[in-house]
Amino acid sequence: MENIQTKIEKNRQMKKVLLLWYTVGGNFGDVLIYKTVSEYCNNSNILCDFIDVGRPCSEIMQKANKYDFLLFAGGGIIERYVPNVIRYFKEDFDMLKVPYGVIGLSVGRFDYSRYSGEIAFWVENAKFFFTRDAYSAKRLNSICGKKIVVGSTDVVWANERIYFNKIKMEKKIGINVRDVPYLDIQTDIDWKKLECICKKERISCFIPDESGIELKGLEKCFYEEQKVFDQIVKCEFLVAMRYHVILVAAANGIPAIPIAYCNKIKELSSQLGLEKYVLNTNEIDLLPAKIELLRKNLLVEQEQLYANTRKMKKQAKKMLEKILETINNA
Image (cartoon, rainbow, N blue to C red; front, side, top):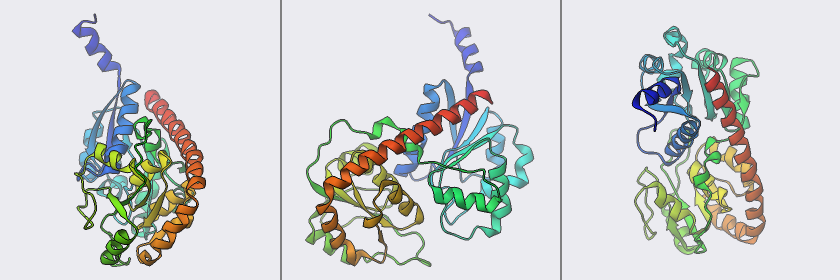
């Protein structure tokens, strides 16, 4: 058996990474992103710690200097809001003594001109920069005026735990909803109308998220990762707003009618071949027609999902292999 001194020496030699992600609120997708990246690192003998991406930039950099690498662990870090760590990244950059990289990021269709210089600097100095869709890569490359950012896919596709060996399908229609975040520029959902459609179409399986929205008359369960999984696999198909609920369902051949409350939902739908089923938040009247269309094409859509999700999985694993190699060589 190894003695304590040998273990200490091994720990000293292991690379250490600080992950940035939204830790507040226990968001289903953010937790999946963190677990996917940290598990990959741990399996490659890379030690991981984390800090919330919303912390002050100087605080993040000071903590990062105790590690070998700083990793922005993807997701919707930039939607309408540009977090402190990016807004002050150029100003505080001299504080950072370790390399950094970005994976699985997506951006919204918002005006980022106020922070274009800071965003460009952040992009240009990264050891690698992967987005989770082509739109985000094109937008960021446009901001910095260089082809630096690589369009890839969401890192969660590489997480083996989202692929279930046994589907307990009960041929239910599931629904997953959240609050609409930008009501000053976007129409809210007619929630009463949606409840009526759910009743008429027998949409009975409620898939929760942390926002607390509930629809009357539907099954309810506490917001826990495994219970979200358990609800998804009961369904023949879903009506869904959350990015990673749509993703996990698709990974198991369960298509969704996406409600696009933001651009990242449209981009994911395009990757999955589900564009024809997308609804905007002001188009709930069209939901019955979308349900009828999906019922008619269910087998075709399931086959297409299996093909597209395997491609996403391969792409995500390739991205992770590259970033782990870069971290180990840092």
